[in-house]
Image (spheres, each protein chain N blue to C red):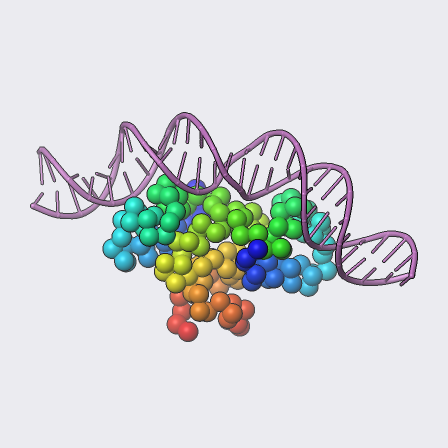
Length: 76
Length: 76
DNA sequence: TCGAATTATACCTTTTCGGGTATAGAAATT
DNA sequence: AATTTCTATACCCGAAAAGGTATAATTCGA
């Protein structure tokens, strides 16, 4: 499966908060299976569902210049 | 419909290249109806399909810190 | 190392996205 | 202003996403 960076991003954010996949699914209002697919890199996910999860971390999906990807988390 | 910024982003990029929706759909390999839904802000789109379009512009979807949204296009 | 908790895979159902097409509406060109 | 080009809406259909559930597999702590 593709989509490494987003799945890793979610997984790290979740663990950083000490949540299980199930807890994250409840907090975000998406199904547990969706969280699993998200973290294992399924590429054909719906944007709005992913945003439900990202918003818990203060993020959302947006267009990123391809060669600037890794600088996402640079300070302001 | 929600999702203003992404739809506007696509529409502006497309016009900037002087393409019609139909031309963009052909170049990106997605359906014309999808391009329309994307530009009119449908929120429940699939990530991989949106990326097919964004990649023509050198962009792709990624997590963006919510309060940094408008700075996407800052220079490197 | 064993057992419990967590995560990954698989199956089934419902819902709906994406494509195709047709048509109506808006914009632009002459 | 009329015609052509482009965009928005609406319909139908097939494919598959999302949810639920069950069961392996894995991880982690006692």
